Length: 151
Image 1: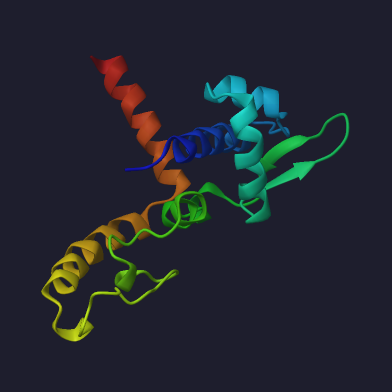
Image 2: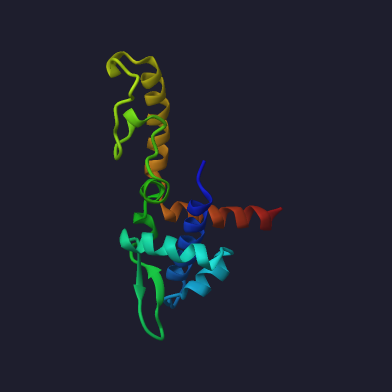
């Protein structure tokens, strides 16, 4: 499951992506992002700093300051965001790309049936999640709005 922190991050990024896609994009204050995303400002500040430090968004100081997307939505991978906010994606530490650890009770990774089974499941999950970007979330939102409008 994704955490509430991750949901707040995605909502904020969608707000910034929508602003970037508008005719005249502007940097948005933390208050504007929080209001548009429907997220608490106090949680959002820390989250946006993490995302900024990863280079996904940028911040401007001053009167017209605020946050803006630093990359096109099609280049912001959801898997990278999940790893940044939630940590490793793997269901077992011995399958993690970024936080590999041998399981303390494992005698042989090559013959471990638990590892092999979860590796197959995880591989399928990774193929899907690695292919998704912020642009896919934006399209998903547009598709949902269209389905509701057509109903």
